[in-house]
Image 1: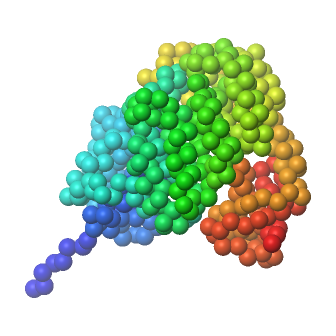
Image 2 (image 1 turned 120 degrees about the vertical axis):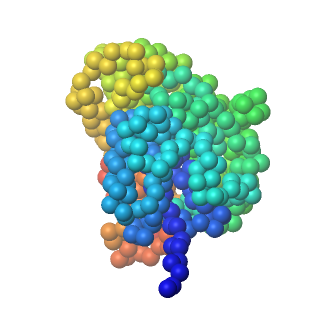
Image 3 (image 1 turned 180 degrees about the horizontal axis):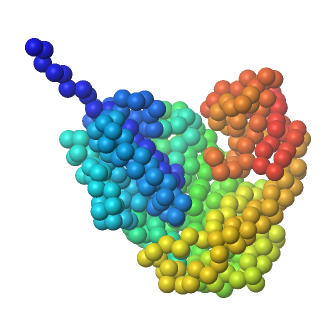
Length: 437
């Protein structure tokens, strides 16, 4: 008789939620492969026998999507299609006890900071020499860089501190090494992310140190663009804008979630600021860098938002004319401060308000885009899709902002390359351009 050969494990990592989760999945992938384990990210192959689901627990829709995905793979396990299902990430951090009771078929649940424990399930060690190295799950020409973990802010609506813990900055030297490694592997754009990027350095250096970090990263050879996300407005360090102005490879782009345009609602949200202070901050930033693109996000339907407060937010959007805007509807999250308030606005009204704000933003974006016709921009090509090469200007981030479409039947571009492109047509959220020599 022939001895039965043991089939080698193949691990498939499924990522739900935001770019911060994607970074965590990339770190996990790197550690597994560094330990000689066959691991893949969202593989379509049928022969992966172990699944790790990196969940999101931010708002109701995201939670439901994560639960549906867990149930899908638990069903696959019961049908003998996979051997083991592990769950990690924010949902698991926040609801571990409930999940263990409700879905006991999962082999193990892990929190957001349990990577070494998860690796032990594979008889793998956390390899410190791989810190700063990361296998990317997308094209290598851009990479998210998480500069800190967790958050110390007391925002009423937000469950992130429950899932991610308090704010912990990564040392500048470690981040510079990571940037150098990425540049050596073809990365041209770094997207800096955190729960609150303007808090960076307070724990390590006893001061807000984002400006120094930006300056050090901008010195890394081969990095053409550095893009700043998730900058908290209260106590915003203006030296960041000064560095942005002085360094050509720091994009004139700022993602600064303002969340509302009514002082009363901002107070209920515990944001530590007022509408007037927010407007003053935006004016100051635009005064220093007139061409800057400001992206913000707003929440419709937070407790305390009546018709009057919503109209204040409408006026705020119309006056500020943000280059980029996203709107979420309020989600009533247990164990947050706002959960003790009455969630009195019906879901359909929240959605109507969000839609109204986005309709206003569509017109603002259309008008701003019309001003770009005839102008030439440096464009980074992200992909080829539907007969077009699709790229972005420095004023646009990956997946959330405007795109530049270049007709592939007229021009050839390489994904990951920069081109000079002249805009000849513009819609609300897309620019059509020709490559110019």
